[in-house]
Length: 256
Image (cartoon, rainbow, N blue to C red; front, top):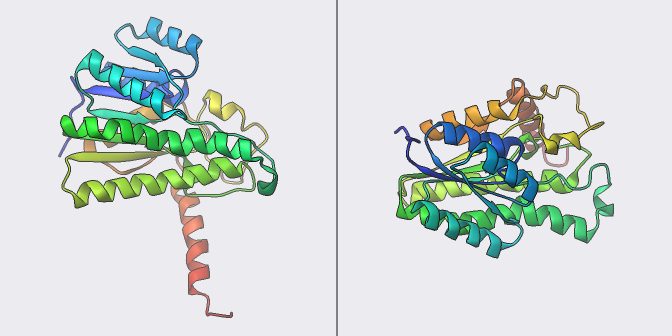
């Protein structure tokens, strides 16, 4: 069943730059009523200038109370929510050895990338149920299906987001709820987030693409209720390499 976007209400966290802003712009162009949340006031002011009809709210997803306030203000402004994009994320320490990442750094990355998504789902899924059909978008990364020697906290949280998306999808199906899930799995994207990846590279990494292209893929996935949304050429090879390595270990004789 196709999910129509025109006239729907969409909420986007981390919506004032990068993929989040591209999602907000694309959804606005599709005829959605859009609300965005972000921690950067100046970027929110630019969103208000570029997209006059958008509700732009200052909110830190690491604080569940602020996420709930964003949800409440979205409903107060537009009357309902049909689509939520849990997009906000940070990289955290890059290059540190895992055991040297501090507790504070772990808490910061987990608080935004993982618990921020949980808080977003807790605040918005009940609203989607009231106005079903609805859809959940989660921005993960190819870091969810690959691994590297850098950014241990970032990769750990992105792996967790893939599990959350898969679990959410299974629960919606199990309970016959008219809600879909799409998890974005982009590789390198030309955003503010990606700038901190300078000097971090893996052989075979797909080239960076623009956030607007990621937003296009997401809209296509929402319309078709597609769960896993790969955005880059070469993603299949990277995912296959990880899966084949796991299978090879699983097939080794015990003690071999």
